[in-house]
Length: 424
Ligand code: PMP
Image (cartoon, rainbow, N blue to C red; front, side, top):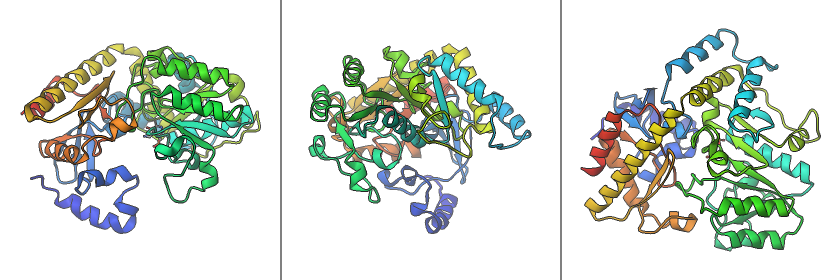
């Protein structure tokens, strides 16, 4: 049994200070029936908790840590930048540098805005699309997550195609009504919404690879279909690449699948571990953002000099070392195989979805292609697996419905150790 005395002490104090003792719900470990570990520090592929336990980390801060923790080159630049000032609220050359790098990697980003979280990026991209089209409604997919802004916290039940209800209390029903919900990988559900809401849909937002119901891969014709139907209807296609951006290669999902969205959102990796996100795309849409246009959007810490520094160094390393992607993908495939072996050995059903360095092992016998497939998983079996891994020094996502994140810092030994634990 893990010694978690200090984590428990901190958790007790935190419970009184923050809802659930945490600053973001998934950290509370509620889905896996144990109290959260409090982290002391992290280096490379490892996180260390306050009790001195060391874990191979497959959460990687939910995606930013593609180079592993505390990458020495990123750290060096960040520390240097700190001595020049932490924030100015004024433009810097570094913002140009990061924007140019993003443009180089993702050519659809003709013009962009930096913000501080993925939530802000998607919320602002939708406002930009509404401002540009003069329409109010949007389409999202059940099981896709785009941050916690009011209109995007709508996932809805199976009657969702006609009725949109908020997922969270505190979201006015009148906001949620503007959000139409379609089913991932289900073209008919999208067609129906367009037919029933002619000339009213400002934007369709999608995670090109869904990674917030676990990883769900688009069918070959799904994204091309979304590109086509949005174009036909004068609707802005938004790729939410907060997870896929700079992870499925430097060009993200849009490069991987060869589809050019109108707008895109990036977060996580683009800030190299600091609060930074970006939205952008077509120049004719983006130039409507204030101060040049009438769509208002602003931020005191936007384009923060430390965050841009971390982002620049991270993207430079990724751009200059394509072999890192080859390595991460190969390791992800090895892990995917190990889950299949585990399933066989234990006589349980596991379905693995893997693309690039994104992967989920679903505890279900179904072929997971959508929300219904993902939620057919046995979450109790997942919790048992999570606890087993943790007790064996391996930290995976504390929820069935999160991706497994593999980084360039995971060594052959880390991967082998993980395979050994999985297949024991
Ligand atoms: N979009 C996607 C696809 C995400 O995965 C997330 C967060 N996991 C967000 C948006 C929101 O980003 P943030 O948590 O930085 O607000």
